[in-house]
Length: 365
Image (cartoon, rainbow, N blue to C red; front, side, top):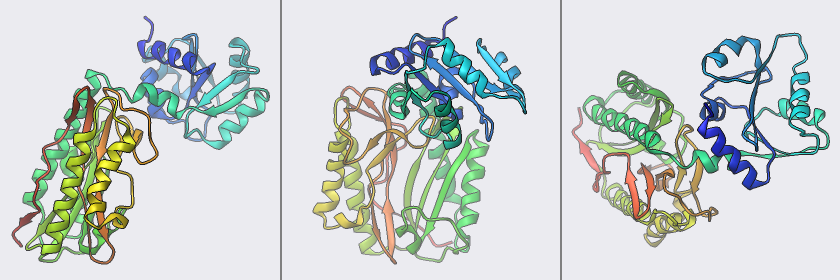
């Protein structure tokens, strides 16, 4: 039975003027073929031709697994053998001598150079945006998994509200969050816990900072559920928040709402970013919003489409992305609020519970 995803992808290759695509990362290979494998230092690729033909070149260590998954054309090699002979054979079979070839954006440089040494007349080009054209449009089954992952994030946050206590370190809270995601069937992907001034660091690395009374807390975490990711950011106060913290929270919340209400089929991501950013700029904090409004998400935590000032490719139904504006005051605190959305014809559907419009203050305990 033909693989529908491969046939659809082959049409995208043909429409893009590309003769073949070489998948190499576990996510890209897994999306196209169901074969989620990391070759590490060994040569491994799942190739798709514009005609719809496909072939896996893999270490013999992975052959049985690939056969079990239903991949039909497998050429395997053992340690000590010349795997490039298998690549050259593929090139001959598919007439790729002077072809236009797209590759996974994250293919190891060593592997790309070896392929280029075999096909010196071929044109190699980045293939990330080509595969993103298909991966970015989630079908109903994928959207259901995204919703399930989002529910794990929401219920984990609810759990955290009852578990976080003064005296805990950022690392201890990280472990609480990760263990709860695991308990619900998620595979933790990342978890950032920021106390007080640490929240002003957009990509803070958790440390042994201890939670003190009357402290702002920012948590940004996510997990994978059956291969699809969630990602949320919440801010709360343990004890009393300052009036400045409460006001900036309201600004960021309004920016988030402006962004998610702008996102719909046909909207330009740069305009979604502009709607979000305008709220923060008008409030006088433009320089303190130092990143894009959001990123695409699915089988990767970060994938297309980026909700950024430089992206003018219209949103399509099934695109999934974050809206996560932030304001960061170095040495004081930071506030970022994030939910995930799926683009629809007349708007966007959220995968998460609504964000609280006012800064939550929990008792010191």
